[in-house]
Length: 388
Image: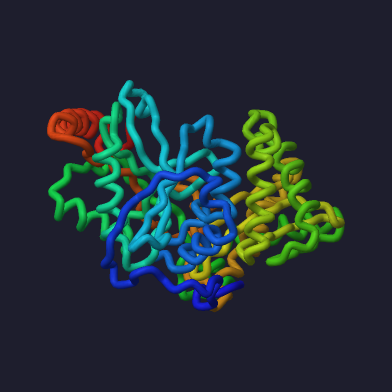
């Protein structure tokens, strides 16, 4: 696994001291698709204090190509002394959940699991200041800025809190949830024993033995691109054969998600950012998992298993193997991309990280007054539980 200490670009970090002339510029995906822009973008991903693989070039460019027109999405390029220093995809929505209220905010789609802008470490305050200035200037019908799925810890969040306080800008934390993460000094075996009761471990050993009675069971962990196209096809077919396929939500069910999955995995593999785990029975996958590597952290992107073999818990057995991340000296944490109500991973990984969504006042005095009234009503109806 590549360490963040190993450079992915020979470009110097922009203004690590957090000083300089900062601005945001709206641009198209084509404007950021040149080799030079992608090199700078990839370097920012290395320097970012808050890693976000879903806003890196190899994931976000395919996502924009597939979904931007439908989601009214564009890109905001953060520049510091005219150098590329950060990026946030922006969307304009005519409705705010069930409310007929137009808003602007960071763009997420159903396969994007983190809303933190990608910002070079040391420039976080300048980024938030530039974003608020840009939103003040460009808001039209939008009532406020809606920032979704932000980690509520770390330098990026602290910079947001500090900048809001310094500007005395009205803001409301409208949603707070706990995300399931893996962060422990324990090795994989010790963590497994501490997390799973002896009775449950015995049952899982029995299921693994029963699965082995059906044929040869093998586990493969890959961090290269060998056989990737075949692996993608197998994953899509396995997922579509289960309940997601029946519900029409499997990746294979729509050309856009199928293409995004394929292009993102190929892009991640090309940059050394992909890890694949496969549990196979007689060479046929029965559980599969794709992780995105960000240096000190790993994000679990997608997983699936053969539901016909659910009595043998192949998905849990694969997650047991995934605990091998704890034995990697480079990995400090892993984000499950799932919240604490998830029926499986919430019982296997014990650590939690707070995530939330902010609504932030923008524009002039009248707009901010209207926002204050709206925020008061919203929080009274659903305090920190999310819009209803």
